[in-house]
Length: 110
Image (tube, rainbow, N blue to C red; front, side):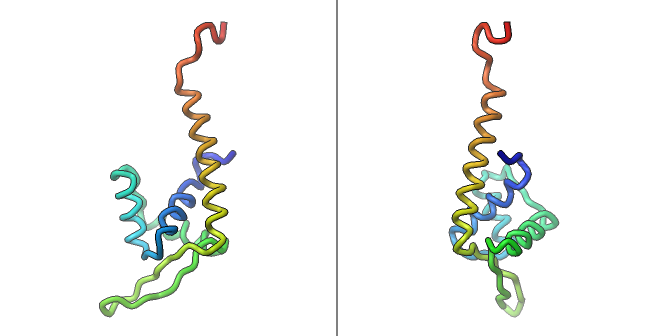
């Protein structure tokens, strides 16, 4: 089971399943979907996107909008399998954490 590190990769893959987005839009979508709880600075976002691209899970291309260039990222076909694996890993970690926070049953530890 993986720890919390690497969960950002899964979150970005989940967002990109909806369709291609540029970096700022990805960060905005993450913030919106998390109710403002997850803010990802550019210094964190782009290295993770580049890592996912090197792994073949994300593709990117340059696009010109209103005379300005921006890089647009999209999930690759093999990203769905990786997303499923990351989600299962997150569920395992979440259950383990829930178990620790849950009150111990009566008589446990006696």
